[in-house]
Image (tube, rainbow, N blue to C red):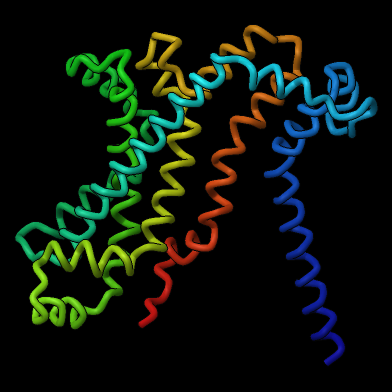
Amino acid sequence: MAARQLQSSFLTALKYIVLIALCLIVMGPVVTAILGSIRTNGEFLSAPFGLPQNGIQWANYIDILLNPTFWNFMKNSFTITVTVTALNVSLASLLAFVFTRIEFRGRGLLFNILSLGLLFPIVIAFLPIFIQVRQLGLLNNPFGVILPLVAGGLPGSVVILRGFFIQIPNELEDASYIDGCTTFDFFIHILLPLARPALTAVAVLQVIASWNEFFLPLLVLNDEKLWPLPLGMQQFQGQYSTDWSRIMAYVTLLIIPAVLFYLVAERYIVTGLTGGELKG
């Protein structure tokens, strides 16, 4: 009995050690950026993981926040992120509803074809995307970034939402029809409110992906006035290539909105991704 308890305690301790190690690996760059942003450049270069020795250097943030170019980049990122998320969630909801509730020939085959999109990251399709965007006349246009991001995120979003929609009982749909609801009424007024955790999970994933997208805007947008924050980061780093503290402040400001959105919606994410449980 004592040996079994000792073994259980050892396994528990090992799990905590592994989890702590993983947290340090994941959070290491974030902590480095935050600490570097509130110190002088000399302090950061001499001890990247140290604490401020001469007080918190808020000037690193003030100089960036007073720069109109930063706010233009922020506006562009916000526009792209909100548009991509809204279009992706709307289209994925409709597609998931069709694949779940509407019977038609070839439904399973079409869903499997759509699911194949999960196997191919958008990076490997940059050349055909660039050609299509150019043919559509969307080069140097925000929609040249928005539309490929929406399309690239649809397979994952549809799979998540379909898994949640399947759990909603057919009896609920039948009862709504008896009460006079149309198919669209059932979708809007009953299905979507019940699927709020899954919708939030999909929205969070799209916000993070589109907010941090770098290569697609780099490929499509030539006008600096249209650049989102990640591209602005490249320009900023070029201007302040030796001022690492100011660069770390820019990085911190870049990640704050996505982190705040994640923290607000965090309680829905696990439920949405795992299917959760419907509560009557």
